[in-house]
Length: 270
Image (tube, rainbow, N blue to C red; front, side):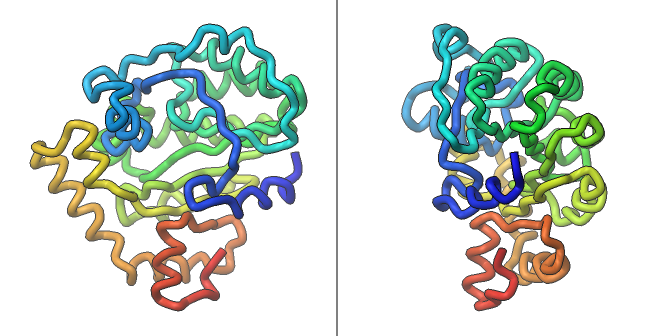
């Protein structure tokens, strides 16, 4: 999988900046992140409940038997759940079905080290078809624990990144949503182990998603959300972009690009 081919996918629609193609196996996610867009969508459309979301269920067992035809595209897996220990081997079977025809796969995860180690070891023959993108919104594990209560801490995510990098895989990081205003710490820690890109983005639709996900009346969480959004003033975002404007690995999500457009600082756009 060449980087040039991946970069073409960055110019996708607003909601599919990484790729237009995505696949999922599981309904729900045990990480149960407070701001989860997939949870909010499922609850909104009455496909799940806030209390039940953390209980992972395979959407359709036949998906584990299904083969895929070659799409000649970059396929994101997963996009609405994660790869967790409970369903690791199910996800690996599903992943094999995607990789076997020859397509490239973007594996997006808040990574559990043992899951990533196993995937790296088993799928080593397919390593040139795989790009890992690990979500790390803060270098402070206490911050991660608050917003992403059942997901791995910062140290485990960093070790997962290092393992994939040292195993010869293509690697990238998503700092969306940024969960504090110290994202420089994340960038400094991960940069030596990133072969492709680091994406920065603000939380989006935060209050609405928190409300749908069952936290509308939780004053602690809603006040924390207000404090978090106040951190990301236009001035902060523009200063962040200026610091990294000449680093070709740092990429802006649409929430950041919108700030750049409002300010007319188009030289920061990338």
